[in-house]
Image (cartoon, rainbow, N blue to C red):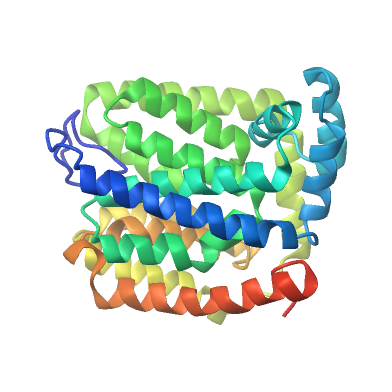
Length: 330
């Protein structure tokens, strides 16, 4: 598949000459404000689960020297990925309340994701439905903080294209925040590599930098993480693959070709075989969304069905937050 330098991997068939309409800016701001207000209500209620450790770390590193704060954070959180630490250290050092800070970050993610979807010619109703109701996004908003920061950086990377230096920088920052974000970047790297000589050069530089980071800094952590998931993975059941397979099938249908969805989903399916599906279905949905938006701006049976299904799943998640202090009690 030929792609020229002006083809954005994260924004399919987007004309870079098209002006960014004021009405789209207003929609992005509105959804960001809505998520900000929703977050101000829900975030203070989310005190359990991983938030116990996130909140404790945020309090402890406030006002500390960056090196001391880094060591304490790593002990508290048990991770060597530094992206989330930097963001949280900045907020705590500025003495911003954690719930307010998280609400601002959630609003930024909502606005940037809206911008990316609208540039992919998504219908406003579809994009708003995703940002305001999607179960997986609510998990990122309130439970999976490191993933949230990584997704925000990833969307910055996608919207930065065709500026390859910016794409490279944001991609590496996203990977340094949550290594599993590589699942969402593999397809982008492949499309860049077949698009142009320039794309291949940047892809090889990125892969070399990523390999150097992993091998030189966090290979032991990565080996421990994979070993942990493999040890605790549930028994292999073909039915557990149904959600990801369904999203893959719809990606093939709406994507219009075999190669792109296959490149995107291949790594995900391999990981699912070794470490299970429960932790990875969220990535299958994020891979699907790019292809689902291609048909009628997302106004199609597959996309609408997933939006409604995941909106329904959001309801008990939010209810659990108010009843038990975390979203995964039911």
